[in-house]
Image (cartoon, rainbow, N blue to C red; front, side, top):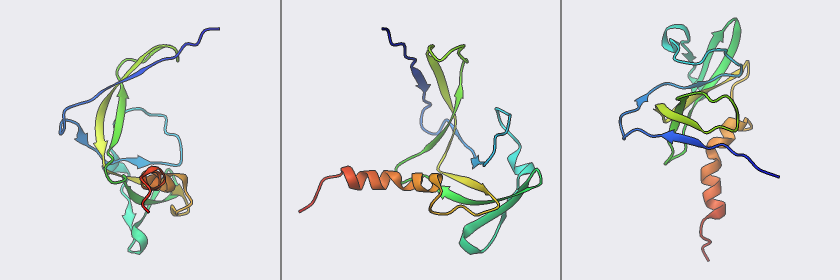
Length: 136
């Protein structure tokens, strides 16, 4: 029995070379890969309560909230350099932009503490508490 595995190589840029870009996590699949004119066609309205944002996307109401990356973490937007034909081939990706916050969107209901993405942002702090040194 043989076990084939592929490797993903990430090409990092020197600090400051990658541009900062706004990131939106939508509750749908958009069949487009590449840049989009988000600021021209996707402008959210911010409500005073709870930093909630609202927007209409293709006739559907979306409600969102801006989430910050956990302290000490930076988000990366990766772009595949040359697409492979199978899962067995090595892949190479490069950093196309970086972010320290993203806007997380739900259909019709605002994000809350039970949403997996919201919970994931708190995971590094929880993991450190679990795996950190125990004080007497």
